[in-house]
Length: 140
Image 1 (cartoon, rainbow, N blue to C red):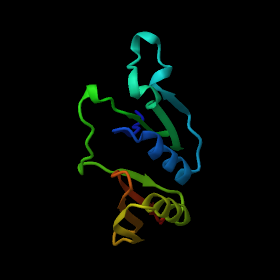
Image 2: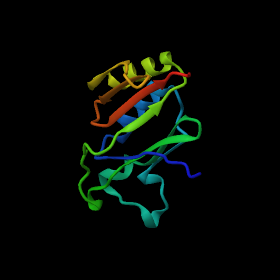
Image 3: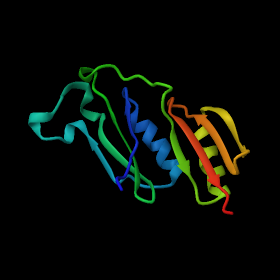
């Protein structure tokens, strides 16, 4: 089975966003590369040199959250409402911790609570405009 890893593009604040995610998930970056670190023939120069070319943050069970700052030459970076990153946790406590961390400075769109389908579930948009679904499925 293939592994699916969400990849987020930012318009210049990737480092800020991923430092926030690192604090919420209590993980260290697997990779963090700036545009200035690429071979000379691929460098973009200018103000983009310090921006993030690629970052990878382990979330658990082989899943990585990845991202970069998208250079203006590649078109505008926009945040849409047609996606969400769904996290399934191993416990109700972990769901609460991640939900509270990710929602700090953001907006809760569905409070974390017992859902009619037998999960502890909630939804939010974080302070960077990324939508998250956090849940814990009770074992039967």
